[in-house]
Image 1 (spheres, one colour):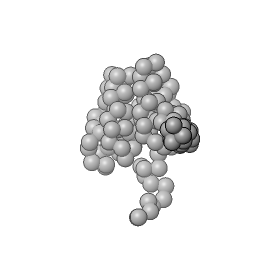
Image 2 (cartoon, helix red, strand yellow):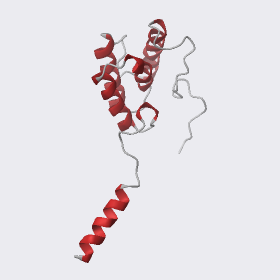
Image 3 (cartoon, rainbow, N blue to C red):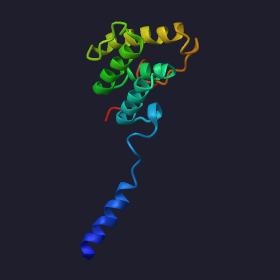
Image 4 (cartoon, rainbow, N blue to C red):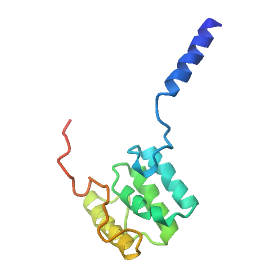
Length: 128
């Protein structure tokens, strides 16, 4: 009985240490949190989130890119020839089209501070 109580306390203590995968939305670097944010944006048709979804097109995570372009298609009716599995140079060109689209649709200011450091890299990535 004492062992069971100790295990339960340990599990409660350990589970309370990590932040929820659903917290943080688009600002959370975890792909899982961004996936939840994308799902909510589509569910509630929050067009103001479209620039954040466009930013997710730059992710290294293939699932996040797949979900992002799917959300953009559902919310805008177009894909601007973005393919989540294209090589990086082709994805970058399509990402730039999406950036220009958000500006043209007045969803982002003309000088949008997109958060991506992937295209182009702000600094060389460390080689570990």
